[in-house]
Image 1 (cartoon, helix red, strand yellow):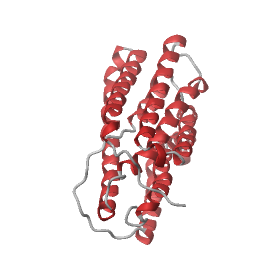
Image 2 (spheres, helix red, strand yellow; image 1 turned 30 degrees about the vertical axis):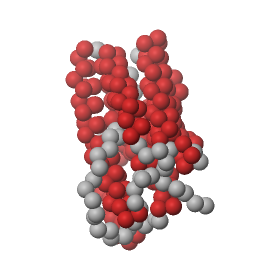
Image 3 (cartoon, rainbow, N blue to C red; image 1 turned 180 degrees about the vertical axis):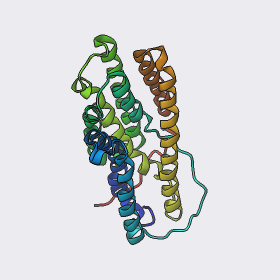
Image 4 (cartoon, helix red, strand yellow; image 1 turned 60 degrees about the vertical axis):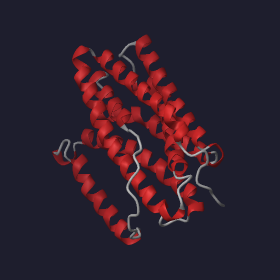
Length: 263
């Protein structure tokens, strides 16, 4: 992206790209749940994989048509991002609360709405607040996780999906703020010559971290299930709180200013 847009325009570009990445991360499981319940042509769960052939084909054609060819300049820098929370919530809703795939999809809608709302909030503030905005997003996620833990331990596991809407909305808002601010904050001190490779590396490492984080967290959750449903989700969410706490500690290492923007 940095090779396509001049540095002054990176904030606007990432303010669109980053939240969309988050939205489609959540929208994928929602669509998957609908497809499973629909049981198209009697194929049961198989359409959730077959649809990727269509989506991947369209993306490939568009990439060849619109993306520039940019040589690499530097080795990637490591960044820590995770979408494991989404997968834990999906498993929790289905395995513990016994929601259907469609009910699980509905329960995740507030997360998607929150991501879009958080992205909108962050768009006008990232240039002014930079890394402080990243910290605010992390704090919102902490608040959402804490609210869910309180709800589960006060009402138990017999609750409809809509009662979880406030906590998942708070998590989504925090995630949207982080998605919209982390990219151009991290690139705030990058020179124009290295902007292309730096932004590409950041995006690539994010995807790798998402995959590793999701696999690790879901493995922990499933391993703890024999000890009890509530205990498993509690321990996993507490682990997320600890991870986000570590992220808050390293936020001061980010550049003080974000990539500049112009109208």
